[in-house]
Image 1: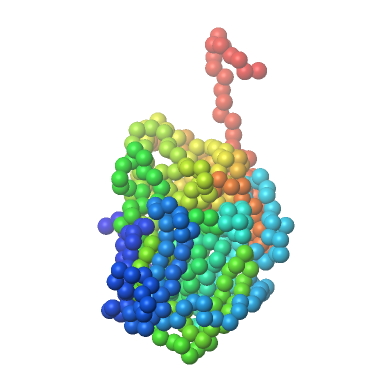
Image 2: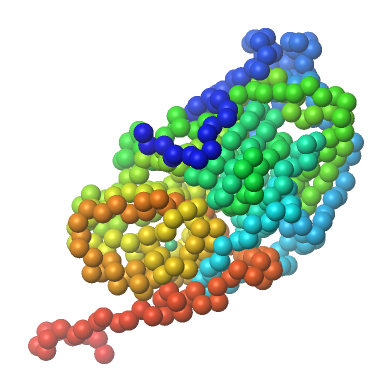
Length: 456
Ligand SMILES: [Fe+2]
């Protein structure tokens, strides 16, 4: 079966389908029939609407859910600012002042595990573009945590949707809409506003997050590919309703709002949703289920064939964010330089590696838990070692990427790097270019005399 083999077995049940209208009740009779907001919702629950798009967004984009809960989310004391030295998602008053826009290729050594912090304080903004207050752009985070969130804390981001890519450890994510277990080689998306609590059943965790400040992720169009392949809709898994009864304990709701951390007290659990229905919910996806497409004749298609999820800008076909993977796959092209070509793109590319070795970088500097950024029009491509090997390889069918999963957060925006990403994390490799491309040698030979020559 084309699924990942996970060390940690699944704990929860799910309902399947991408952008499917789901409904789920954890106790029979909790969902009202027909009406969304009856005068008295069943079982004495409160009805609460959670909207992920404007009410009047076109039907094809519209994402809303109805939650039936013991107490509404509004029952809390005022939010108060709660910055701390370990909270790094935009700590400056003016976030753009400490964002560096630089044309160099950047590569990071593996980011450290940090066992001293929980999920909320593990978030490090490493790069980004745009502004959550304008609902434009993306943020790219590294997370590294070693502690469960406090038993009576929940977190949400008002700034955008979190696409979470675990690289190490297991995330047990209790959301208002139910529970998700997320392991390396799985991803999950927690939409804007949904409250959740992260615990770490297998110890420390580390990974990457793409926060989307605008819109929501969609499956890419398939064009001539047809109606199946790449990420199939049926493989996305949404939680089933799960609720707890607690109206006596003090809870803290932590909110990421314009990059800053706020906290509010309430005397009831936020995980009290007995039933829900709608299109706005968290979900997860096993990257092992991706059905990869490639050339069976010659040349190398654009890496857009590896797009799992996309978030389009106002210009169709131009993504604010693409989540792209490089899964294990067969290469069979004839008379072809099989690794990615050398390129300069208008899109910026932030890459990470979950495990294994990425087939376009054999020099050894791109490691699991590391990263690279090739910004707008920054030249890059296979390193010298890979070029040498691929130019002389026997072109028989070959499986590449076995045991490996590299990915890319691609954006049409020019991506800036934070103070933490460029300096404080101390992971930037100073010798990236000198190791990768400066060793490239010219192989040019003029043709024999007598043929036409325009070169100087
Ligand atoms: Fe690239």
